Amino acid sequence: MKFPRSLPGLARVRAFRRAQREMLRASNRPGHGPTETDEQLEQSLLADLLADPALAPSGGPASPAGPPGPTSDASASRFGEVGRPLNRHSPFYIGFVGAIGALLAIGLWHALGRLATTITILLVSLFLTLALNPLVEWLHRRKMARGAAVALVFLGLLVVFTLLGLVVIPPVITQGTDLAQQAPSYLQHLLDSKWVRDLDANYHVVEKFQEEFNKKITDQTFLQQVLGGILGAGRVVASGIFQTLTILILTLYFLASLPKMKQSAYAMVPASRRLRVVSLSEEIMRRTGSYAIGQVSIATINAIASWIMMSIVGIPYAAVLAVAVGFLGLIPMVGATLGATVVCLVAFFDEPKKAVIAAIYYVIYQQTENYVFVPRIMQRTVSVPGAVTVVAALTGGTLLGVLGALLAIPVAAGLLLLYDEVLVPRMRHS
Image (cartoon, rainbow, N blue to C red):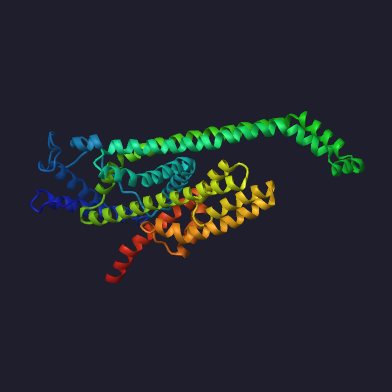
């Protein structure tokens, strides 16, 4: 902060600062402390500074202008004399400050590690917000209030999740119950098979298996491990449900307050650069939302077409497999191939001929998707070179798993936009 030249006592303030600097230099020279003249100069300058009415504290009496002393100067007796500045070149000072900085960095790292789940939930919520915001903006441009548009879009999201749950959960429960009921007959059929009887006749496999089974049943450690695994699986399911509800609630809040959030963020940018930052940020968010909508559309088409194919061919668990294909289709580059592999494996264990038909279908479908659906749906979203797409997907998948692979492409698109609009023009003019 710059003071005006006409301020009374400015020269004494500067002299006081010079005296402080001289004392600091003297303290940094071991064995050469400040002389008596320096101490007297410091005390006289401090007394003059406190005695100046223009620099005295507001509402308090000015200090006397006489020579300082331990009994005559009220300020000196109240606050004490000005001590020697710390020697910042001391090994103790450097080591202490360095240790404090290292401990602070370690504490922040551990705090970030504990907040990994929370940060992941925030990232997923922001991604869903940016994906749903174009629909909200589209309804808002059609004369619908933003609150009503947010409510309608969020209601549609809840309907989609409910339908997926109704499609997936009942078949899983039904098929799991059937498997548990048929397990004894499957075991008896296995024991009655010829090759098992031959093994039992030569090596007494069944008897050894029964002995090992009885031993495990009576082993308390094994039972605790099994129960711990079951309880751990239950905790994982409960935690997944809680995190899903948290993501949906945060997405609703973010959708409702997204304009205010953006205004608050833009207000921290200097006014001279605000217009450019706003335009670049809006374009990055538009690309992210458009990419998410396009990827969901492509995955939905793949799931519906797969369900129709599996229903016609007669592949079991068509509804559950179609949902799995849809979710895997969200993963860029390899998602569709993973979904096709899962379907072909299930079809092969049911009947090899069905697996061949499914494989031929997916080869034809993926060519149609790559050359028909993707160019039409993604033409207004992101434009990322193939090499950058591969590197971004691998990096995101390594860092954050499936979530990182999903976020990798829009993040790469945003970085490419900053490269084209900020870095390259700056290098041209430098």
